[in-house]
Amino acid sequence: MMEATSLGLGTAWISYFDEDKARELLKIPENWQPVCMLYIGYPADDYKPNENLSTKRKPLEETCFWNEIPKE
Image 1 (tube, rainbow, N blue to C red):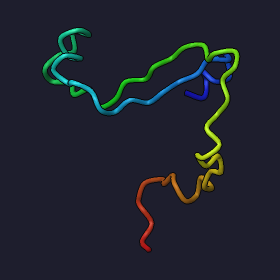
Image 2: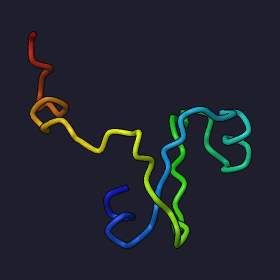
Image 3: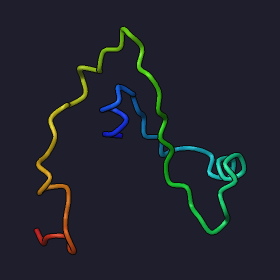
Image 4: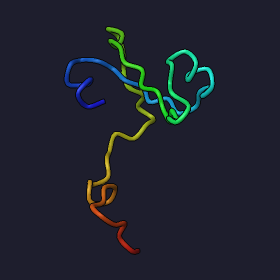
């Protein structure tokens, strides 16, 4: 998603879809499980982000872990 954005593309992460239909259309092997789809395209010229959604990110230390999940 970050690479697409750096190229001027927009993306949307989709996690609710018909898994069987996706498997059929995309010829996904039975031993694989699709968990998401990523839509990629050029945003409209007049696109404006939703101002009601937060654009503040948590620090990586709070969301990414190395080797183990910290105990709280």
